[in-house]
Length: 239
Image (cartoon, rainbow, N blue to C red; front, side):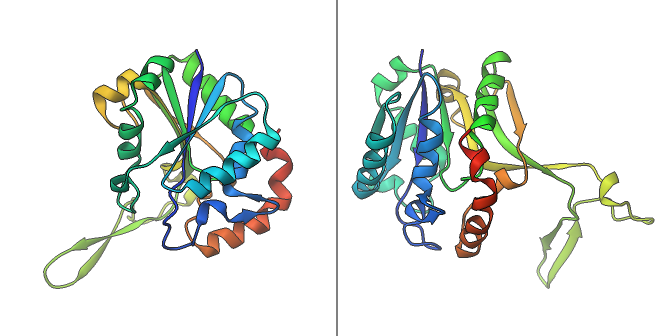
């Protein structure tokens, strides 16, 4: 049975206008994602967007560069086209289509704003999901930072450490890793998702990716960094 890869690409980004069609190197973020996913075996692709121009952009690239997959279009409702819509909101709407629930057992989600996750890593994530018979899987980045958070009180903000701040202070090599969801890849079983209604559930697995692969393009500074990194990383992205 084929897997469905969902590419969620909302058009109304506030920090970067038309973020998903901004370029890194010679490709837009949508094209980078399509170039990788279209090389995977036994997958169909669903572009979920509120923008017909995004779909036309994706379809033009896809028709010129892919022969092995199918590119489908999901028109988001107005309700799920704003900045407060969650990934679960989008998946819920997609799964209102009974044909999708009949045709696919598993779905994967790839955020185009995480362009540096390699096709080899995506393949490893799929293999891990299948070989371990997981219910869900998601990409994470491991780090050991000195993180502080604000504890609110009525008079002033108080900062509290989220690490052992006792003396002698431990070096980063002795601090326990913290794992951050990168948002780059999620995989989930449809039946399990429809029961739990969240992106990680059941027998789940945080799949560690590299620091470069964890880069999420959220603002123009991220986009500038991505364009600086792309020449050094592009050869390993697509092979």
